[in-house]
Length: 519
Image (cartoon, rainbow, N blue to C red; front, top):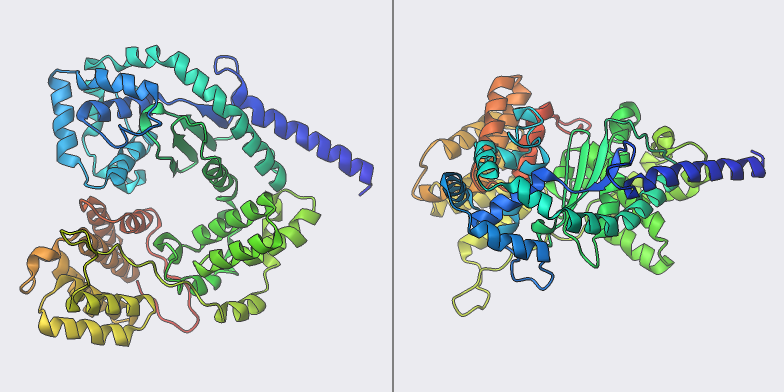
């Protein structure tokens, strides 16, 4: 291409991108429709007002406690009436011990409800985030409180402050949109059904939350002198890149073998162990971030090493392809993506990853004695931890032997029974695994039945049962078990995520050459 023509093309592209990015900086009343915005949310405001009226206390004494939150909290705590009492009773009955998890479910709820006065869900029940299912009935509770407490008037009273805070955040977000879209050579389409919103909410506290349901992406954060722009950029890159592995399924499938390497990494979060599209997108997002950061060579090498030791095995290869191929080409990433993946040499990368030493699993927090010192794990706990390490290493025989040793001394121990069932899954013995999982969710077993009801054991037993039913072709039973996993109070996030994905598309085991299917 003629250099002058290329420069002119880049200038036109920059102009278009700049215009799209700065749409969010125009006052809401006059700005054109855009699929990338910085704004407030009446729904999130209503939910946070309800939480504060119910006694939500996380971060109320923080030094960066926003004046709006401080002022409204005192007003909301004084609200009285039948709806306020019903709200407080609901909150008490559904409160979680972990403040972060407690807030997260309500933030997710706010992301999937429509406007007042009814706050009805905007998606079907099967599309609801798993944590929202535990808040059954909150729509009506919220709607009644919103009317009784006249939250609409409170919302109007804070508009000036919200507009100021939104205005402060618009320029750095516009810069993120400009730089990220420009690097990927993507032009945002204002009329697209896919939307990305940065929601400014002083009532939410210091926690930054990212949610996406279908085509709607949102980052929810409180105003700050040091806003979490890295998290905003990470989320926006997901907004741009998430659809690509699904759009180009054939070339994505041709690189699916890399999931086998990643699954060996003890630190890799569970949501990436069985979902290659999610792993691939996260690796690409991380690679793009590293290109944008322009780190010195030594710092870059350390970042790449740490990232792949955590299990994100394609970051290095994708970084190389971005540098050597994509940046020298002209098509936008949404067109270049297949060539990007084809540039990854399966044999060459596979040989390198075979030698890769993954980082060890993070140890769980040590139990504390009354004096505050960390307690030594008991012999039982040591055996259980050994069996779980063997499971992580796919050592089915070793794990079976370890858990059977535990059960010989502690018959019916639920955590050991669960470990034995997972080992059976690894051995391909689905019927034996199914029998144990059914016992774990179906009633007292042995002399330690009280521990059976731990959320981890219950939720994951339901998930594994559902996967077995999926492989057997019994979708109705599988759906029932996935829903049961989501209904377990206090279920870990990774189990909820696995259940949610099972509801959406069933269980699809990673393809392993010469291996039989297993959940």
